[in-house]
Amino acid sequence: MSRYVLGVTGASGAIYALRTAMHLKRLGHEVSLVVTAPGREVVEYEGQNALFGFADKTFDVDDFFAECASGSADYAGMAVVPCSMGTLGRIASGTSDNLLVRSADVCLKERRPLVIVPREMPYNLIHLENMERVTRAGAIVIPASPQFYSKPATVEELVDTVVAKILKHLGAGSAADCAGIVKPWEGNVAAGNQ
Ligand SMILES: Cc1cc2nc3c(=O)[nH]c(=O)nc-3n(C[C@H](O)[C@H](O)[C@H](O)COP(=O)(O)O)c2cc1C
Image 1: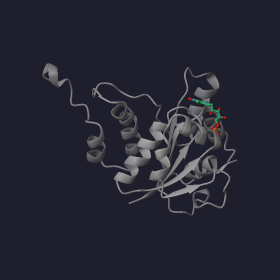
Image 2: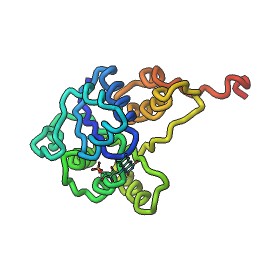
Image 3: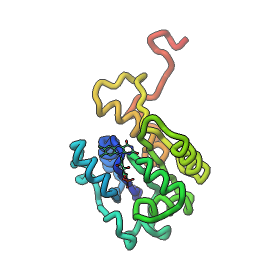
Image 4: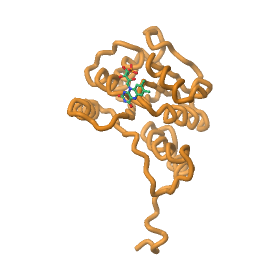
């Protein structure tokens, strides 16, 4: 069992946060939730309030006394799901001006996995440069770009194609755990794996 920070911002796609929290809990991990003010509004607007039920701890975004603000606290990593372009820019610039951005900064300095799931379309050059910057600093950018080749039948299954990647890169699930969420590609079985 490990502890993870789950940062949630005001980008669309609160269901990605909910499914990430749900699977982290299902895999036996502890979830510390940090949600920005726009994040709270979008979670509510998109009807994903059940997210809060999966948190072991929920910290105020202005609470710099929270454990995850310090590198000495025993966290295994952090995911920012979904990540707005505003928060992406703040992480890329190292502003540390709220608990979510500070916690991300801590992960980078401690060389812990920081998974950033940006959500915007189209991207402008500033967004792309910020993604490059956080990648250079050690973050893993996993865009909210679900795949269809596993033939997801529901929105939840589609969302989980992204969530399985998040869990894998956080180190929160074994290959078997992630395969239980989304079946790995085994070649084109229908065509006899040609
Ligand atoms: C319904 C709704 C959807 C939004 N979707 C996005 C989005 O997908 N990506 C994005 O960068 N901003 C989006 N925004 C704008 C952000 O919420 C806004 O830039 C906010 O300042 C982000 O603040 P935060 O990074 O502190 O959460 C959306 C806003 C609303 C109200």
